[in-house]
Length: 73
Image 1 (cartoon, rainbow, N blue to C red):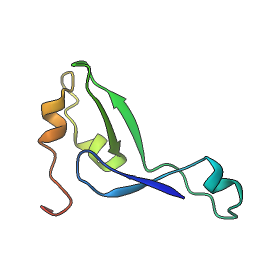
Image 2 (cartoon, one colour):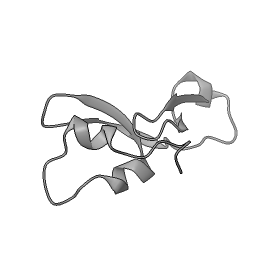
Image 3 (cartoon, one colour):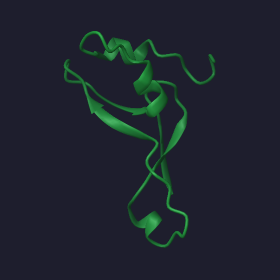
Image 4 (cartoon, rainbow, N blue to C red):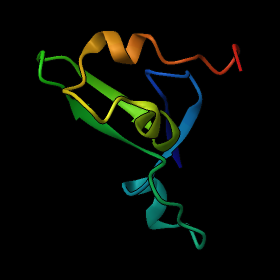
């Protein structure tokens, strides 16, 4: 199973699918998603960080940078 760090908190999350899951009897879902923001930036965020983003306006790169890191929690 491949994994990738979240651009918000830094936690490594699973990336499901691909050749790694082909032979696995225990496939796991992807723990995040890549988002393209209105300012043109792209970020891979875990589901927890996505939930922490503002929902009353358009999200920008500064909002991702303002997310607490895994070590700060």
